[in-house]
Image (cartoon, rainbow, N blue to C red):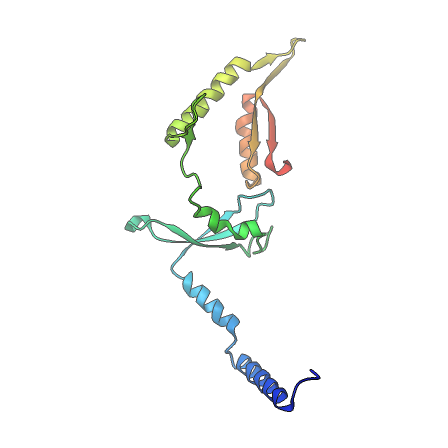
Length: 196
C-alpha cells in the first residue's frame, strides 16, 4: 500500500465502488449461477439415495435425464448431497462428491461374473443364474454343516461355516430384514460393515 500512487488508489477505489454497487443492484454472480444450475436440472428426474461408500450413510440426490418409456436411456448427470437428510444435511465428503465418476466409470461392473475353480477368466452370467448359484451353494453348505444339538444334547440350531456381512450404507430397516432372513437359518457369524 505504501508504493501505491494517487492514480492507482482512485482506480482501485472506483473499481470497488462499481463492483459493490452492481452487487447491490442484483448483478451478483451467486444467484445467477444458482439459476443456471436450476435450469440445468429443470428437466431432470430427482432420485433420493444413500451414498455407498462408508457406514455414515449420507443422503444424496441423483439427477437423471432420459425416459425408458420414450426409448431414451436414463443417464445420471448430477449428484449432490441431500439437504433434507438428517445425517449429512447436504454435505458430502470428497469420495461422496465424486460419486458421478464412479457411476460412469468404464471399469464398473454392471452384471454378475463367475470364475470357475482353476480358471483365470471371468465369464458373464445372468442375474438369475447368479442368484440360483448362491442359493444352491448356501443350501448345500447348510445341509452339510448345520448343528441341531451340541455334545450335551441341548438344541442349538446353528450354522457356523458361512458368514454374512451386511452393507454399511444400508438403513436400519434393511439390517433388520437381513437379520430376520439369516437368523432363522441358524447363521451365527453375522456382522455389519460399519464395524470394519
